Amino acid sequence: MAEDLKTEYKGKLLAVKDLPTLPKVLEEVTRLVEDPDASTDKIAKVISLDQVLTAKVLKMVNSPIYGFPGRIGSIHNALVLLGFNVIRGVIISTSVFDIMTKSMVGLWEHSVGCALACTEIAKAAGLKDPEEYSVAGLLHDLGKVVAAVQMPQVKIDIEALVKSQDLTYFQAEKKVLGFGHDRINAWLAGHWHLPVRLTEGISHHHTPTRAEHYPASACVVHIADFLVRLMEYGSGGDDNVPPLDPNALKILKLQLKDLEGVLDQLCDKFLEVADLSFA
Amino acid sequence: MQKIPLTLAKAGMVLAKPVLRSNGLVLIGENAELSDAIIQRLIKMEIENVVVQGTPLDLEGVGSGTPYNRILERMDHLFRKYENDQDMALVKKRLREYFQLKAAAEAAKAAQAAEAVEAAKAAKAAEEEVKETAKSTAKKGV
Image (cartoon, rainbow over all chains, first blue to last red; front, side, top):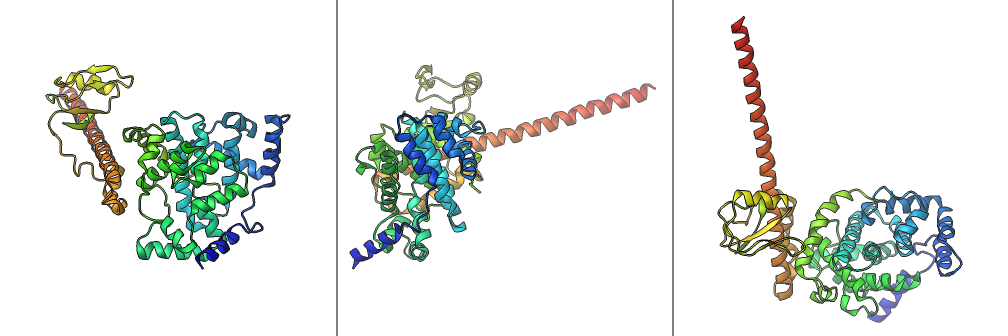
């Protein structure tokens, strides 16, 4: 029966017509990026056609998360400064988090905190393009949002289980659904054709050593999740810290001591983003 | 041997480990005795922590009311599932030390700021007094 249940839930989750649809623009943009003749100008123009989306993207890229607070005036500017992968992540997060219900404000804060932490950890580890990791941080609990929107009853069941049996949200998900939000992330990433690095970052943040192609991405999100939960910025659905896999630090060639510098940065930055939202 | 925030270091404490600049350059070697002048120089160089011999400070419970203390208080609860996990115990111990240092430094900073405010008040009061006496002597002169 367990297997049937799992299949049924997966079907419900991916029922395409109800899925938080991504803006048409994203498809167009994805196509343009693969086209060798398309210029940044052309891509920027396509995004700018959707004014609401443009406003949201600009608001997001001007937040302290990406390191250019209040200095990006146009989509073209944003594309040049942050790169296409980051902008694509921002577009996805704006449309997905739009549908978040009021009860999930804590999760949004947790996601923003995680995005910040990812950038700092990537910097500490000396990785290239630290901003790209922040997108993985921002989207790492996407599965929780989509599950809650598609199946509201399931969210209520999971929360009840967390309370009554003192489980983590992740454990409770597995009991109720048969799989966790990491699996949902992997399905969604496949469904939306996200880049592999982002896919691995969001679908392996609980099992960083199992990421095949970009273990660094999964490790960064894994550690960021731990730190943000430790500082209790926002809420991930339960009051535990997730287990920190020592191998994640090893893969990034970091030591526990290096996390102190990251924490120093985070303490300051969490004040800056205290009231950031898309609304 | 104890790591302490520089704001709480006092003249007479002896270094157990050399103080390094971020580029690895040694500023003061180990076994050197701290003096007020040296501490002031280190503060100017933005050194945050020093490691001194013995355990001169009791950091437990210092800095209550700072955000770092809130984290410290929640830590046992957050880590409750990992009582038998050695790796997590180590992580917890290191993080606890980090937040204790931060809380102590924050408390010391707050105390210093309060002192500065007090000193400013005292100075202002003294100034007024001087003015008052000047006025009264002027009156007397008339």
